[in-house]
Length: 522
Image (cartoon, rainbow, N blue to C red; front, side, top):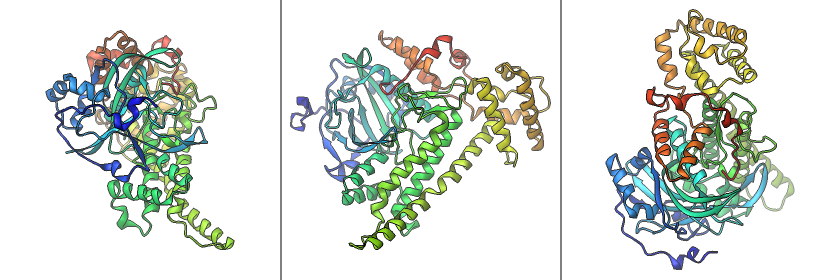
């Protein structure tokens, strides 16, 4: 372990004016759950970017955010070079299933929680990703590179603007310190924000060690802090917790599918107990629609393909359920028959909590896609209409984002204004056939074209973080030009708006984009 990983060698604390108060939060659980240690300083840190919307969550608004970010104290704090008085840095321990296989103990291998901020918008944990070696780094260096930091920073804020539950990103602090991945790169720290970074894997960790006291303590903390109503809704608050997480995960999966987002590494240690999108690594947004698209070059079996995400979310929930079983399994002593009956009863309790997932996912899925289609009501034929559309988009490899945005421009009466969307299809006749069915559906509810277009443009983004856009910003940043990071952040912060000066960000990807690959090192 590096010398500055020892808490006794903590860096001198520095004053830094912050607009929030702090509270112990997760740190109050005790040191079975984490290791206290300071971050490893970035050599000669410099500011890459600060996100105004995320800064506002902590109380820095407008000019105040920009002024704070220019202070050396800000750069030193969020580059891990100084531990301010309000911080209590620590790395948490968890375990998990990775690519469907039990991986044992994991933990915050390159993330260090600074503090929990109490703000007008609620509690926010402040975490440095790339903060250096921790006891959970295993064979890694605990660092993040500029490339991956830019991707996570931009996507966190883009997803928030899209209305998808997500962790947030406050800033990127860079350094010229060399870091080896596939090639030699430079280091960076992205500061992440979330009400909590607790994962399914935190529960799996204590269940695997049969530390049921800590398991119960963690569950009680989550319920009391984030789901207090569950205490009154059920005689079994732990079953109620599993059910609530299941419902939130179902909603999240539907959101991902609707915007064409692929997470890429849906391990149980990357699943949030609050139903947030967490740990942006080998993610991607669909360009040409491929239901079986695999965004993670490391995922050779396609476990986390776009079409598999809802099912994998459900699989991960079963892992969480297995971890929580001891909290309601009765201790029946040594009788084998009694133990079997208790196990069966506990498993049935878990199934009851998980059963609503499918119905919740289906309801959220159809609600979101009816919105994308501009439909105001439900109809028995909607499933067939959508199934036909997905088959057509898949067969024709139509650009997903452009299709939905341009669909708002067609008329419900005839095909006279179909060109912007029709020209995305090689098989124009196939489009015409589906469009006729769609127009029949619109007429069935007397849809008004103008009102429908407004409603559709409010849910179908014009701008998403396509891989080539992120790559362009990354290449410029390697030469210390961070202007493209900031321009892209500004555009993605208003994804549904027409931004005439930013039209090129909404165009079809260039040919070279098809050669881009992202992997677990991303």
